[in-house]
Image (cartoon, rainbow, N blue to C red; front, side, top):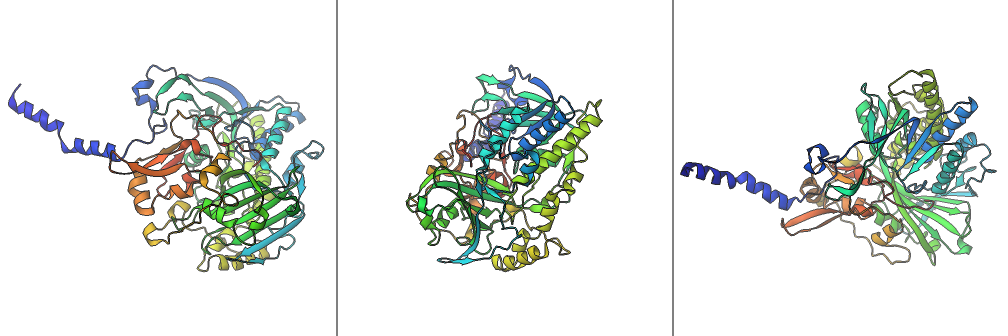
Length: 604
């Protein structure tokens, strides 16, 4: 070998670009091993693996077994029975048990339930707490100022019920099964399937038996394909398949970007003498500043033990990266006009979930598409000033089922996905559309130079007008764009939890019952493993450590790279979707873990 050739090879071996790549590996260790970002076709570990799936053919697939999905399934079977028609309806639910991932306040308007199952009382629906009293207050640092609740205004809950929504959803699941609906709990829908013409063909459930490294384990099993004439997406707020559908079909082009909040909730058993079943309390103000949207709820349930549900909502358009929604919730309970109810009480449950706050302006321009439609919180049907969406979810599910069956019966020869074309018009002719339009300006009213104070005046005017004002306000920047640099923001020092009224994060997460198979790729995927350190930590001091309500994200020393690195504790995840929403660079993409993973809520 010539000396020149030897020298050339040595130069190649020590080329600076190679040295930099080794340095980058140390500085930015690989975090994401999930196949959605590391295609298995390019991974030699998968070359000999059988990737064939079992296929089931059904008439209607419903993704998500919440209020919307279960109502769609029930209504579809009711309509088929009326026509003496046999249809196969399948509900795919990622929770190990129906209702196990449901979290809401909740005060429910029974209007949709009355229509869907008129004899729900006789059938034993768990609506045991009619609202007996409403209070609405503004909290100062030490006091409480009452705000009147006028009859017919959004905060008036006369005729409504305080419920544990997970229990109601479980009951709806029982009703659906009695009608012949096939429900598959513990099966997460991980992929949308398409026909050659681009219409939706159905969904595939997730594979199992994949190691944390991304390699197949001996226990690997392929998911199942469910092919349907129509697929209804009822995933709830920020569904990961719904995101894909919206993008593919341009459903929200021309709409205002969705706005979100995070709702945190606890269930307590309190002293009997402090318990007032049916009492509904809401507050705004402290501990949030006037430019941060949010407030609290506290509901007294009629249970065998004196039980209350307490929660706190923070708008995810907050600006201060030092803010922690979880810590704000804990601080709220220590207010001198609030803490008395928690004295001597026992906390028995905790959880959190992102919620839609965009309202009418953020509804998709198109609610249906070739092969399916969006219902419930997947579409954004939530009334922010009423703090309600379950009755809209149920109604939209019912209307989707009606439209789907109309379309399926009218197009019996189609080999492509059938679009429920009448669905959007049905929604527009329902109370869902009317209600959301009438309060469309309430939430964006708080985007003003006076913050909360201006918002109360402007939103009060809008409510007084019943939505008849000839304008529609905008929401402003998207939630992930709202953070200011940490260096120009006021650090927030939160008090140490006392373990009696306020608590630390990890002991709270333990109450969720969340559990995931440990040896699987993290389902919190990063499009770029460098962004957390180079952008989020450098500019915002790692806000994911604070906006996550479950301790999933933390920055730890990286001994090999001599810097900090992001550590993802995916087993802590409670499926709230906050990270997917608030991450400043939209670098985090939440995908489903193995089916059955996640929280195990009992009537949250």
